[in-house]
Image 1 (cartoon, rainbow, N blue to C red):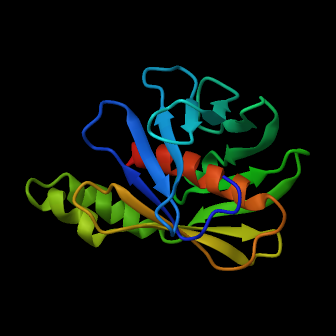
Image 2 (cartoon, rainbow, N blue to C red):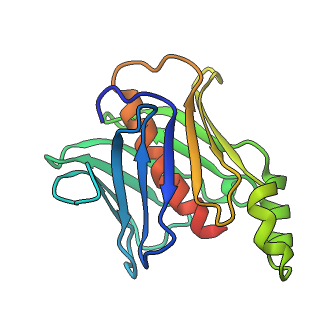
Length: 198
């Protein structure tokens, strides 16, 4: 996932039993094929360089069984940790809040939901017959990553779609060093968790 061309688009597969999606960059090149193993007590996410699943490039695993405040370790193909994403348990009840930590265990970025009311209305109206099928066109949450100075670096937005299966990650400011890799992986993990929670 070197030098990806933003925006990055995540497209979930709705025809498979597993929770999986393909990430493509602005040129249409596949950045990653992401597959979440189902029925696992601890999260275990595999990232491949294509749908063929021949080359495993990253893995993300939870550090504990219950994910209310879990941290998820990101490793590359060689098994080296490149960072972590940690969900802020109580802080995320109303509004999703995650922290991105670098390979030196230092806090680097925050990922926060931009507007919690979008999720509330989506959940409320999503349970109404017929009407619930159209909430994916109306209520589309967004999440921003900010640095420690509070500057917004990237933003992930859910696109209007029937099954809520498309997301776009845009870069708003230059990203230093290899942080784009960590940010993209962090958003991929976050979108799996938030999509499962509704």
